[in-house]
Length: 131
Ligand code: 523
Image (tube, protein in one colour):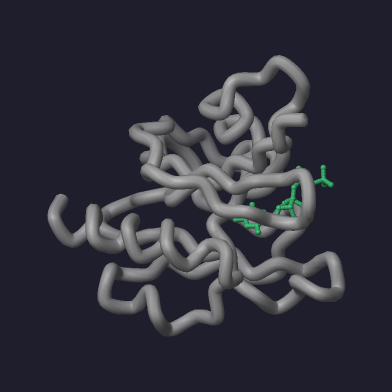
């Protein structure tokens, strides 16, 4: 059986990357992630990302490019990450998060990322530095 995809966004605005602190479940609470969520059946990853960022943060975002790679989560799930540009709104922790931070590329090591997000965060910071 193919794994279910969780899509996350490396959301950029004015040279910074958004980090979101999870509020649940207990084993992930307090760790930082690239915000996102599970694809619904038949949904394209880019559409799922736009939907999740709207629901969780109240913003409009435009997906830019997939970060190469795929990272295992709990059994049956894999993480894919896209860069995205903030188009409208100021992110608010509406759902699933209790804190948000905009990080410059040099600040990305200052929060405790979920292990599975780290390779994509490193690549997102590298891309941001070159941008
Ligand atoms: N991750 C993860 N990193 C990351 C995300 C967005 C999600 O490791 N950047 C993991 C955490 C969960 C699983 O992926 O084990 C599903 O993420 P979740 O709970 O954010 O997905 P939702 O919002 O679709 O979940 P439901 O509220 O359950 O529908």
